[in-house]
Image 1: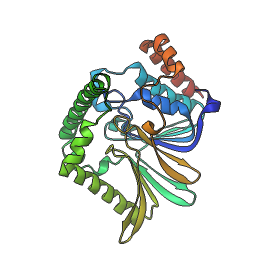
Image 2: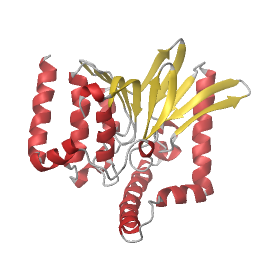
Image 3: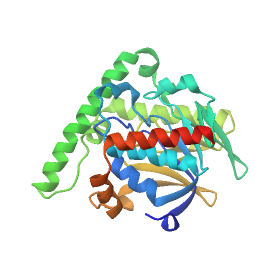
Image 4: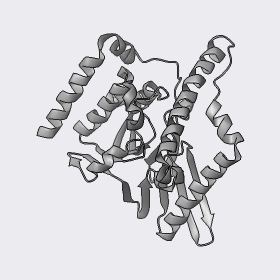
Length: 287
């Protein structure tokens, strides 16, 4: 898509992409990224799944997502990378800056006179804090479930001529402890945000897109969650002093391919893409 046809966005928040896993919907994310012209990009954790990177699974579509991020940086667009639990290795580089790119653990910014607190959210996850091996095991199980889900959806769409279903959503919605975890997560984020006089609290981590006002006895806060690019295919956008929740299904056909993507699929090899990424990274360092 040509730049002049891209939709302008003041701020876009993307999280929980999990590049390097079978469940990542990189092609859909790339289509979304190419459809917008953002002024500020916030990558709110778990963009690259370093936990499961040992699989050596990193197809061309995943590399193209990284390349698009680098294109934004090269164009001078502010890109803030906020670390998550699946890419926690990057926490060693917190404070790193290169051009318009920065790595941090959290971000507080003023929007139209109001304070927004932005962080991934794994700090609230008790399992992550005290039983990391159990959290990693759960991540592997989740990724396996997504693979099975993809097979089920292929059969449902191609053979049964029915729509897509989400096995993990059905499990989450039917297990009381999972529902309680999401409620507790949102309440905790809201409580801390209100106590610190933030008007907005923006998270990822739980793969549950949300945009709602949470009222408490001591105040209220707008709670926002960007969701994920495995099941929900969602992001947050800020335009005209207002936040909105973007959902891929409301704007795109999952099965439709752009002419540009079709051409690239046949012309670009993984090794060439890696070579291009390294060249662009070196150019950015020089600048």
